[in-house]
Picture 1 (cartoon, helix red, strand yellow):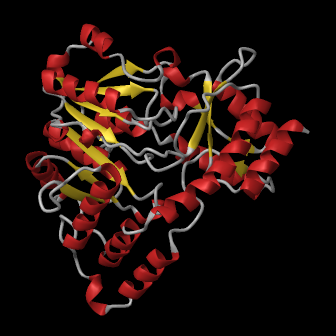
Picture 2 (picture 1 turned 30 degrees about the vertical axis):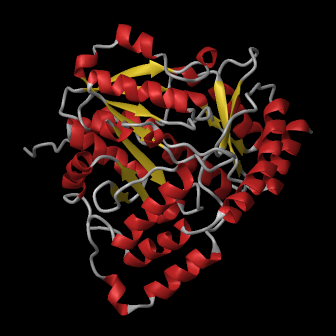
Length: 387
């Protein structure tokens, strides 16, 4: 008798990523002739700056640029990240010891988790929040404690409530993300200070995910602006949204030398570095001036205006102070749920928006619209709904 092969237990603890399954459904609809307007995923639809693309092409033509690269990234890239942080946030980082390039922030979530969490350790995850915080925590065998973010509390953590209800002696990491995805809640130095104080008092790593600080946001902030934050915080940043380089997988983390070294021990056993021409092109991207961000945000501003009209046409309400690549709206009381509205919109109008439940229980009565579609497609979606 043949013995049945079974997967590891962790495979049963996670589901296929929501967008992975939904995109298959949309692909089937398109194959059947449907013109589906996708307003679901936050993948920038515009290219990087032309100089970034030309740098990649020129460097890729050099025969010496195709070998393995350092696990810590090339010095030029670490220095460019450090300069970017100094110019943008006023934060001084040592490019040699306090910066680690990543193959995307999603990879960084796994590396940070593997570096700090033993099986059975606890982790604080925002609800609503980026689903990967939850799935990666499950993959590494951590116990998850969700901390609720609510409209009533401005979508910020209630640290007093967390201290009263969670066994913090078991918590090793708190996942934190402002400007917040999916709600678009802006970052504030006050909430950053509270998070750092919380982490210091309880010996918890504050893992701050910061990819949206440049999108529709005139005051980019870093949690590392808080004095002493680097002692307990790890901040990730990315070129995916800020420089239209999502498919390039160029990101970084910054923290104190000890934390960076622990994370590097994990990372160096998982990948073999990044493609040198991409790193050199990223250096070029990081040197771009304010004109790049101004042009980027002018376009997103035009798209946001139409997205707000779509939300209104759907009967949803939203906070106009939101930042980032999305618009988060509460569905009307007449709707069963955000998922019901999203499913009906896809079936009746061939428009795909994201139901808020995928980000946690607190998102059940919400939907999210991505700004990563042209004004023409957004206007067409509005027309389908209103006519």
